[in-house]
Image (tube, helix red, strand yellow):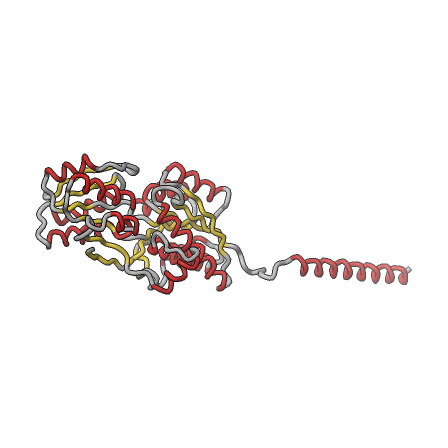
Length: 357
C-alpha cells in the first residue's frame, strides 16, 4: 500500500514538473523582449486641414521626431493625432475620444478654441494636459493643466512701445474675438491708453476693410493684430486696397513665407514679437523628416518636439502615475531647443525676441 502511494506521488510530481516546464517554455516564446516597457499614449489635437494647418502640420513633424528620439531612450510613445480645424466642437469631440476610447496618458493641444473646449473634458481627470496657446483661462480648470506659447500681453506691449518710441501717437488695434486678442489689447493699452482706435473681427473673417477704414479716418500711425497667418494676410491685403500705408505689428508666427512674399512692401517697418531662433541642427532634422521641404513653422515643430519629450519623460519616470508626473513635468529642466527656461506656476517660460522688418 505504501509502495503504491509512493509511486503515485512520484508520478504526480513528475507530471507537475512537465506541465510547469511546458508553460515556462511557452511563456518564453510569447512574452515580448521589452517586458518592462509600457507604451505611453499621448493625444495631439491640432489643426491639420484648416486655417492653421501650416502650424499643425509642422507640429506633427516635431511630435513624430520626438517619438523617434524617445524610442532610442527606451521610452515607447504612441502619438494619436486629431484634426479639429479650429472648430471648438470638433476639439471637444476629439478630446472625448482620446479620453474614453484611447485612454491617453497625456494631451498636447494647440490654439485658443480647442484648448478651452477640450479642457472641459479632461478637467476631472489626472491626465496631463499641456496646451499651446496664448490664453490663460484653462489653467484654472485643473492642476494637471500646463500652458506653453508666447505671452501675448507682454509681446503686444513690447511692440506698442516700439511704435511709441518711434513717435507714433495713435495706433489701431484690430482685435480677434478670442482671449488671445483681449490679452494683446491689454498690452497695447498699457502703452497707449486712450490713444488707441479699436475694432474687432471673428475667426474666419477675411475682409477687414470696414475696420481698417475706421483706422484710416482715425489717422492711426500703425496697426496691431495677432491671430493666424490668414488674418495677417487678409489685414495686409485690405490695407493695400485702402491705401493705408502704416507699419504693422504682430506675432512672428503669422509672418510666414507666403505672407512675406505677397506683402514685402507693406511689411517694411513691421515690428513683431516671437520666439528665439530654433537650433539650426534641429531645423535640419525637421526638414529631413519632411522629405527635404521647409516647414510652415519651425517654432511649431520645436514646441511640439520639446513638450512631447517632456510629457513622456515625466510619465516614464513616474511609471505612468499621472499625479507623480504633474510634479515631474513642473520640474522640467531648461532646454535650449526654443529658449525654454522652465515652468513657473505651470506656465512655460520662453525667451522672447522683438524685431523689425
